[in-house]
Length: 275
Image (cartoon, rainbow, N blue to C red; front, side, top):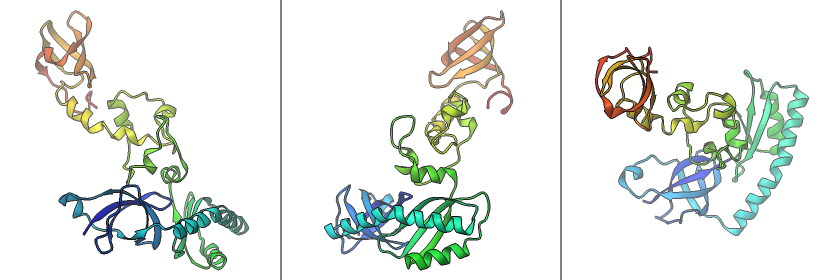
């Protein structure tokens, strides 16, 4: 049975979907699918033809390609989103709840309305849910999110000029540490290595593994080595160029190729100068 990768929902979720009766869909097709949340509009990103990908668990089923009536209904739902958001804001203010609304998502099938919000701690929103359920005549789901999720919902373009990664190809947002920026010799100015969410940019993870592997071919910082020009101590690395900056016995400081190091006399323990 064919399987496809589908993007759907305000959070631009990714899901593997089966089809009805072996139906086939072209990449980029707008479809109506049944997910674990309800009936939703989505877009086909790719088909999963190879055996490894085909074994991925299904997250739902594509029911049909989007029709003209479906497209009109979706446009109506999207046009009503602003009014629904304002209704939610009004009720939050009336109840004096310590929370910030970010997005209101009304599922295509009408099974539920999902309210995304920011809050410092727990919020007692039971009365809010009652009011909204009465207002919208459907199930209300409250979803507390963080600043990275907020960027996924609201951000458009990053500093690179491309659409932010969190609402394009990333299905998960793994943690990013300052150690990753240091290893890649990225500027440590927080304003330049922070994304739209205010946290470290997700792209700092992309090449981190390659940097770690390439660093293994170089002697650790602080190590004493023998070069073609004599003994030296390693001061720093240029990992991509596979070069090391060394201080010779006569206090000269040179940038040399990693291949010019003949042997490591004394290797520092990991953590003192190699991190």
